Length: 293
Image (cartoon, rainbow, N blue to C red; front, side, top):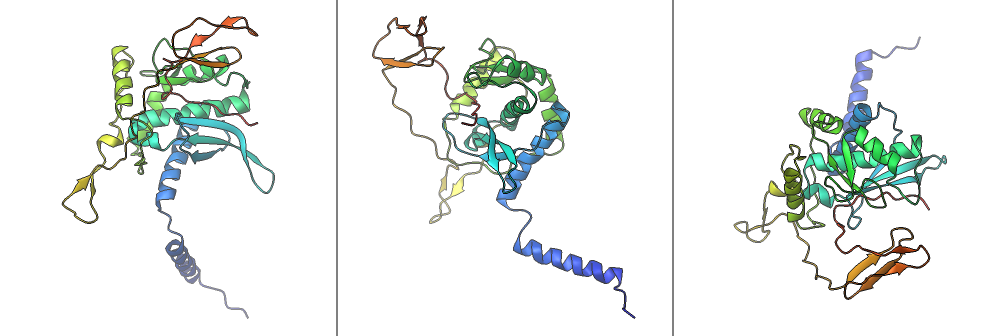
């Protein structure tokens, strides 16, 4: 007669195996901490702002120049042929921006994700009127300047948080649960004063919302490896860019570009429309939507 294993002995074996597995594959590593926090935020906002309708996506961290984040439909595929969208975020801006601002970029890209699966995206205008309407519905106001009065649709559009809107309430609900990002890129993609200037303009426009301090204001200094009495800044700041003396003009219809050494009036002959001066257009406060080729 076969002797039955005691349930407690089986449990001991399971716990022992789990302990060995955790030693070999720690469940708390910098990679898991950062990506799990982003996945948790995605699930929270999916439930609070999208009624849990959004399908899973693959969140990536990429230091893409001059953007906070992007959405790329059907970017990844597995061995079974399943396609999944990419939602990319620039980790350098985690250091410069408040967690409320960082998470608003996540939600900005989630709206692109929503439109790809439930709406009608347009390749020529990734931030179209349908996308803009959905943004407003969840408490983010689309604007190409990141301020009131900016264009709500176009190739490059950012947003600002609607005071007392759905996003702000959902974000505060998440932060009240102890949510936090724990890892920050030391190589800054921009000067810190850019975000401070933007916040000042939002306050002047009467639409600033309460935000936690950006991590760059809180990160500890780094002790020198050879002399612990010497402390160094935690981050590396980019070198100031040389100011260009050239002016950039573009056709808003066909996106042809022209650079000149002085102000001129020009027409795009194929489109029959004047070239617009793009030199003053903000470039660091942009969020772009990439579409698959």
